[in-house]
Image (cartoon, rainbow, N blue to C red; front, side):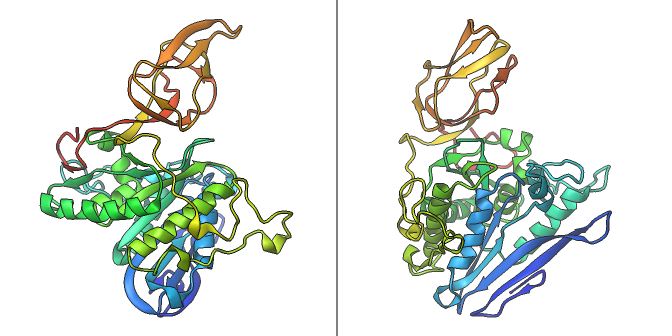
Length: 389
C-alpha cells in the first residue's frame, strides 16, 4: 500500500508524507501519513483528523491509534492522516491561512442534479480546494470506509454525524439502501450518540455534501462519517480514550481485528513521568478497549439543529448544559440588557437535547444560541434532487 512516501507491505508499518501544495516561501506543504498493513487480507480503513486546525483531540486519537496497532493482529490496512490542515494547526485556527477557506467545504462532490461541482466553473480552484482534491483522490483509490475525526464547540458532547444517503444518477435506490446498511454497522460500533445531518435540501444549501465525509459517502459511495470528539483547542483525555475504544470496535465490526481488546493502548503519559496514571474520568489510560459507549440522552432519532434563535439583541444567559434534555416549549435561556434586566425568555421549539452552547454571550436578533439534536422523522435514503424530509 502506497500513500505519498508511506509504503508498507503486508506486516509492515510505514510513516511518510503526502505532498499537497507548494509554498510561496519555498518548500512544500505536506501531510503526515501512517500506513499499518496487516499480515492478512482485509478492508482498508482511513482515519483522518485535524481538518480544522484547532481541533486537536482527533490528532491525539489518530496518533495513538497507529501506535496501538500491531500488523500481526490486523486484517487489512489502516491509513491514518493525523493532520489534514497543517496551516490551521500552526496557528490553532479552524481555517487554513492560504485564502482563509474552510477546508471541509471543498472536497469533490456531485450537486443536486448529479453533476460534478467543478464542471463549467468560472474560476479555477484555489489552494485549499486543490489540496482537498489530492486527499480525495488518494482516498478514492483505496478506502473501504472512512472516519473523519473532528471536535465541536467548547464543552460539546461527543457525537457522530450521520449523512443521508443519496441516490440518483450516481447510484440507484437499491444500491443506496445497501450502502446505508453498511453505514449503519460502522456507526453503531463507534459507540457515540448518532445525530443525523441537516437533511436534503439544506444539506446541499450548507455545502455539506462537500465535506470530507459527505463527499466520500455520497459521491464515492464509501461508508464515511464525521465524528465529533468534544470541544476544541486542547486534548480531552477522557474523550480520547473513548474514541480509541470506538475505533477499535469499528475495526472489529469491519473484521479487521478479532475484537476491541486487540488494541494495545499506548501509555501516553509514561514517557513524561506523569503524577497519576488515571485520567480525569477515573479510567486507567491503558484500559481504553473496555471504555463504555456513550448513550444518546433520548430514545428517538435526532438531527442537527441550530437554535433556538433569539428575537432581541443583548447578552444571553444559557440555562442548559450539553446533554440536557428539552421538550418543545421549555425555557432554555434569557436575553438580558448590559445591566442584567431580562428582555426575553427563549423557549425551545423542538423536543431533543443540547449538544453544545454556541460560543460567546453577545447576541443579535435571530442568532442561534445552542447546537441541538432535535426529533427527526426523515428518511435515511433520499433522492439527490428531492426533499429529504
